[in-house]
Length: 171
Image 1: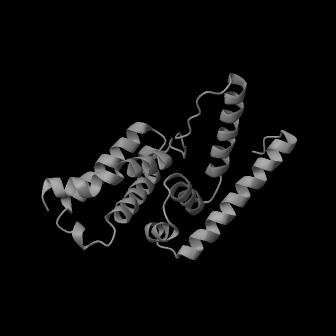
Image 2 (image 1 turned 135 degrees about the vertical axis):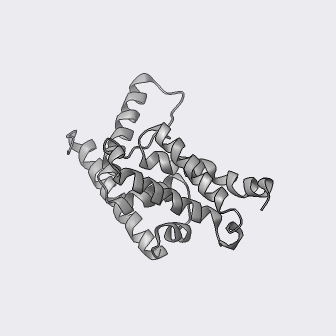
């Protein structure tokens, strides 16, 4: 595989790889390192890439595994899950503060979910993956993806309703 062919194969999903790494690894630097490491591994396997049904699914699986390995390592003892893709423009300061608080609460609730549910929310709701693609990345059936996503959303919705109705932060 030539360099231009390799680049045209992997570059369309480089931002998704970075966002997944950023979701799993707090710091932008760690996410950039993970993305770079992934693309180095893909480059080293460039001759074999054409044998994969979905290079993107393979890359996302590699990213997930690499990030989990980093989180398990001793160097990663201070990392946690975050999501910072939310942006809001043209609203009042009060509304922005309220929205930021809500987003912060959602981040906290997502962080409390089981690992698989966190991954599914990231891949489905942020990255717009199909259920079948998520199933391939996580090595589970698409129906299991749907069930886990439904349960995760329900849990977040219930907690948000509690907090908005009562104004109590449930930690």
